[in-house]
Length: 213
Image (cartoon, rainbow, N blue to C red):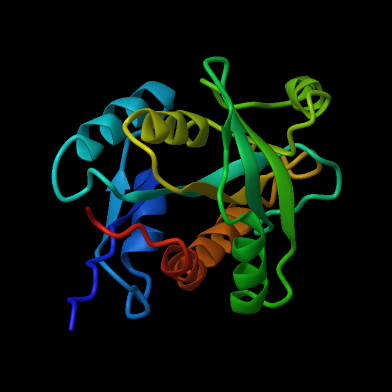
């Protein structure tokens, strides 16, 4: 009887210490294969450096990559704690299509009943987006923006063929700017949601496992 192939690892990349804390203290019992949670540091350059470095070394050379953390919603009606599942990430150097979007939406709805899940393009920025810039980015077709997802996925696919995805939790939105009263409450809500997403990530990974060569 032939041995069962060893699944490729899952690399979950986030930028901030608070995001890393939410993921690190989550229940990982449902993982099917090795999982690494990487804190890349803030900004696209830090994300590119960190992801490129870890994917160049065993055992993560063939890892599936999922970028996560907080984001700014661009569309009216978004609220802190909403989820964004990227159909693609957009970066001036190239757009990256995401894999398994429908499955992620299904699993997030099942895991977090009552939470709104948005799908669409996720655009990268090298700074925190506020005010009128939201409208300009929304006009491009993007529904949310963050500083690391696009750089993370672009670095991942440049390092080798692999499934990639991005799931973000809205922490501020057009009607809920970071500088306004209610930011703390919105941040707590987003933290709790991020702490609950791992089961959906594991199901995505389980469905798209890449056997080692």
